[in-house]
Length: 248
Image 1 (cartoon, rainbow, N blue to C red):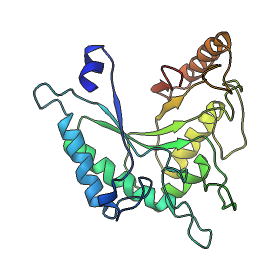
Image 2: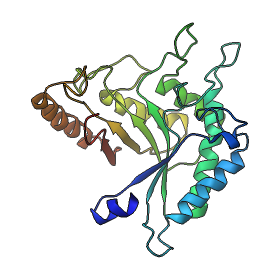
Image 3: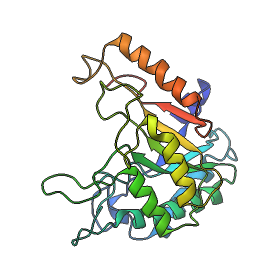
Image 4: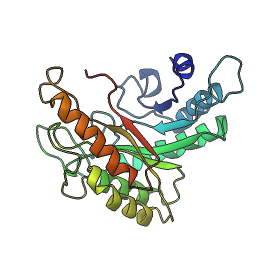
């Protein structure tokens, strides 16, 4: 897949996410590994393999650590039995190990942390999946490790339903495309950094009839132009990935 992408003049970002059962005591993919040093070693191996130092194996410049760790479906548990947040602290450990591993395997690589989903509840609710809002999650990650190293924070600022326009504003600490400037300002405060690039690693609007909640093709075309125009005005956003290239 990477060779084909390179031959087609496409650049790839790899997200290291999910745990095989042998590494977390036979549990599901969304349970973190028992040893973060194992995770670090895997990240180093992947980055080294795609470092450009091996014949016929492509160079990969962009990496990110985990997918939407503020959602229970991708990282569990989100809260302990008393309802206290635990996933941000666990993710801080994964992010630190992943960053260190990738940089050890390829110092030229750029590594994003976060990969946060656009919304969450920040408290347990019986009968529904546990989630954190991206703003609250990032704040707690910073509290767990203020010195966390990363090249960018990655985020998926989808509207709350596929019919909503890119300009949709949501209630903070949820973060839509329109709230990225506030998110960037808060990230700089939480992590005590002068700048925090934000990679928009997922954003998109799918169409009908492939997606029952999708929009007409003409409206999709307009939303593509509108969203990219918005992002082009955000100097702190150097990456924008439309998801997905072909509707499901």
